[in-house]
Image 1: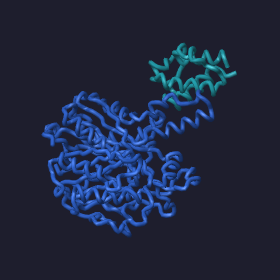
Image 2: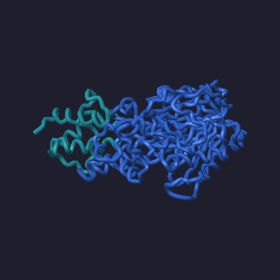
Image 3: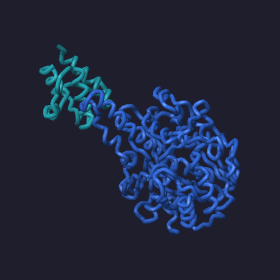
Amino acid sequence: MATREEITSGLAEILEEVAGVNPDDVAEGKSFTDDLDVDSLSMVEVVVAAEEKFGVKIPDNEVQNLKTVGDAVSYIEANH
Amino acid sequence: MSNVDVVVTGLGATTPLGGDVASTWDAMLAGRSGVGRLTLEWADQLTVKIGAQLKVDPSEVIERVRMRRLDRSEAIALIAAKQAWADAGLEDSGLDRERLAVSFGSGIGGALTLLNQDDILEESGQRKVSPHTVPMLMPNGPAAWVGIELKAQAGVHAMASACATGAEAMSLGLDIIRSGRADVVVAGGTEAVIHPLPYAGFANMRAMSTRNDEPEKASRPWDKGRDGFVFGEGAGALVLERADHAKARGARIYARLAGAGITSDGYDIVQPDPECKGGARAMSRAIRDAGLTGADIAHVNAHATSTPAGDMGEIIGIKAAVGTHPVITSTKSMSGHLLGAAGALESIATILAIRDSVVPPTINLDDPDDKLDLDVAAHKARQLDIPAAMNNSFGFGGHNVALVFTRA
């Protein structure tokens, strides 16, 4: 079972790889689109990479609810 | 003939000879070849193992995350266009973007993306296919990216006429400015499809040189030993500008794009008309469009790709439309054949030939074809006063484009 910190740090690695986000900027309160400048196509890449990294399924209708890094951490924590 | 003067105020390129215009031109004047053994492992499986790969990989110029969203042909189009834009001094000029258009094409388009993503689809399924796939492979992608980068709002155009594409982009740019639809057009061509599938296709047409043991000697237009073209990748871009607009802002002017001529053979999907009738008509139209006669054309940068079938037909066409006097060359002997980018790179070579009063050489012309009876700048660059010069480009499908540049 990964901790919330471990999931956040894993997401930060993905965000850096896919969208060039500085890992230091990634925190639970940050919005993917408004704070981290992740556009919709990059978000698709983030989701696919996160599914692989954490062994979860993130259905398309769930992605729209993942507004912040914290939302994604909570979803992954509850489902992996 | 038009009463609107169009001039060239910026040049940009990334080619097998160099990562910019200056290094590419230096290499041409020195007679250096950009052809080598392919550095890609799949080449061992194919009959053709040579090519003209970019001297500077685009990943050295464009940052990693941006490269993930760009097909290689789009990345190098952006590099060439941004160089041309900076060279023209337009960055801080306050140009009204509603007066800026883009005319930028590719012969084959985003095939690298198509093929690479198809591999991913086959191996890993739909979920792993990049969501950037469609904008990366669409043939208007390079033009669109250039338009976005430069905020062009007078229209973004992408043409596809195989190996005549780069030249057709210039011709359309000329038309756009003459018709009053824009004051500035960034025009160019791009190609980056060094991949086993296009290689296999061209190789099976027997269109490519198999001189694998002597890559630097493989591209040898008009030489008796020529056995096909050498596949190259690269991009070239010009800033075309209405002359009075350029003068009003004190821009440095390289040359005038004085005329263009476009025809089609209506003959065969791959074979050129053996007597180059369509090519000659394109040349005649370009000369007339420029308000000149054949006698005014001092130099021709020929299409001559080093194929047994194509090279000599063009000689017949040049003699018919221009005459026996021009000093001709094929810079493809050094750059390889950049397909959809060829007309753009060779426009740059033609313009710099005018500026520097020098014809770049045709290397490897050791044993000229018996029917070659025009004056070629063989082996070494040749000093020549060039008030006006022509650049020819012909493409699969029977597309013929001739451009006439004159000293500004």
